[in-house]
Amino acid sequence: MHSVTGVPAGNPLSKSCWMRPAPRTPSLAYRLASVAAGRIPLGLAGAGSHDWDICAADVILGEAGGGLIEDGKEIRYNTPHTRREPLVAAPAPWLARLAPALAAAARRP
Image 1 (cartoon, one colour):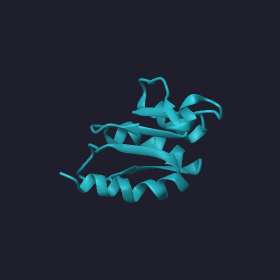
Image 2 (cartoon, rainbow, N blue to C red; image 1 turned 90 degrees about the vertical axis):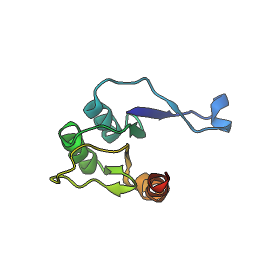
Image 3 (cartoon, one colour; image 1 turned 45 degrees about the vertical axis):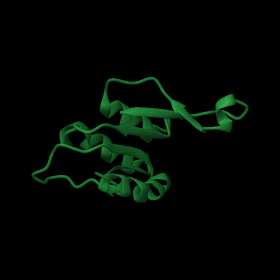
Image 4 (tube, rainbow, N blue to C red; image 1 turned 180 degrees about the vertical axis):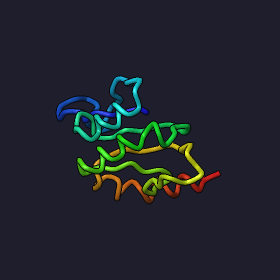
């Protein structure tokens, strides 16, 4: 999972991009919890996470007003499919805006 941090006003990057990569943290659950705590505004995870890697952090995200989506949709647990596609963790208002784009990207070959 990669995370991003806001770029402060006045930073040269703020003219072209309002986010920049944050240092990578090895623990996926910790990175998701960092989104929930507001330390980072958005987290991205590559494919391959399992339900047991993310389910507790997903609950924490939800309780903090955020969420975790896969292919633009909320994750469903307790299914035969436990290995995940790429994931996005963010505050709920962001997810509502990101979900359509992520769903469209997931349909691409």
